Length: 160
Ligand SMILES: [Cu+2]
Image (cartoon, rainbow, N blue to C red; front, side):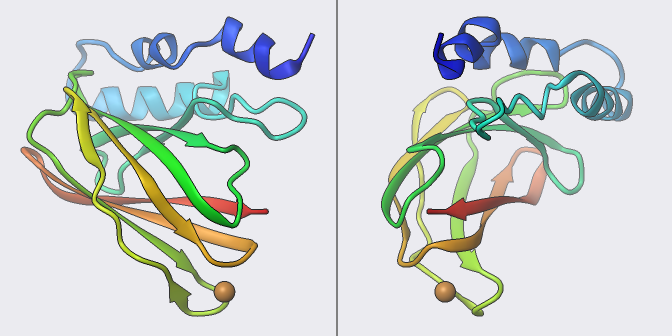
């Protein structure tokens, strides 16, 4: 069986999100989710070939939980798609959020065009305009401005 099929069967993005949601106080939730992510694979669902359909992140202040779905995965030179699911610390989909993504290549000190994902449904933001002009180690810097304030998270991208 193709490991990608197996992974998506075992752990859908929605199921993984649900495991990050509970009703404990906010700080505990964030810590719990992060620890659970590190220990149980909530954040690391990679198969042996590095495929990771449910890429989980906690924003720097801990205010937002974020799942990134990349297409293609791994990302390639040229135009890529990404869909972000944003949850607050109570596990609710984040409505009324402004999201921007800045592709950045630290080793070269340059980026490409900052993109503004569109809202697809409550808490889900997507763009097909994420552009990388060369292979190598990139970051996508995700800037979130929502009801819980401004925050950011950085995701490493190995562009092929
Ligand atoms: Cu470069």
